[in-house]
Length: 193
Image (cartoon, rainbow, N blue to C red):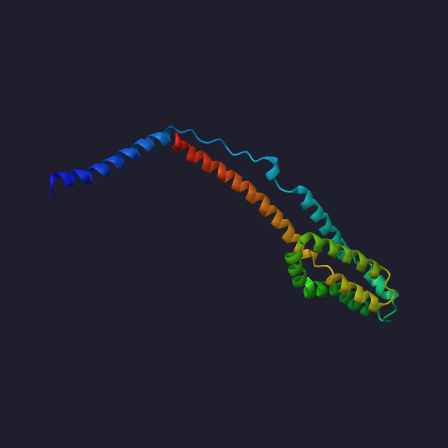
C-alpha cells in the first residue's frame, strides 16, 4: 500500500472518531427533557365507563337477587315435597347462564358488526322485558322460558368487558402516542441545533 492509500483509510476513521467525541460532549450538555404532562382530553373516558358500570350492576342485580325463588316455586304448587323445591330453583337459576352460553358468541359477532352500544341497549331492553315476564310468571314453564330468554337476549356480560377495555386501551394509546411523539421531537431537536 502506498502512503496515500493508508492516509485515505485513516482519515475517515479519524473523522468518525472526532464526530462521535463531539456529539458525546454535546449530549452531556443537553438538559434532561421535562416530564410529559398528559392533558385532560387524553385521560380515561369516565362518563362512558360509568354508564357501562351502572348497566353492568343493573344486569348483575337482575340475576343475583333470586332469594325469593323458593317461595315462587312453592307458589306454583309444582311439587308436594319441600325437598324438590331446591331442584326447580336450581333449574330456574341456571337457565339464564344456559341462555348466555348459547348466545354469547352470536351477540359478540353482532356487536363487532353493528357496534357495542346498540347491542348493549338491546341487551338491556331484553333484560327489562324478560324480568317483567319473569315477575308475572304464573307457572313454572313461564318462569323457565322467561329465564332462558333472559340469557338468550342478553349477551352483555362479555360486551361490557370488551367495551370498557376498548375505551381504556384507546385512551391510553392516545396518551402514549402523544408522550412518545413529544419525546421523539425533543430528541430530534437536540441534533438540529
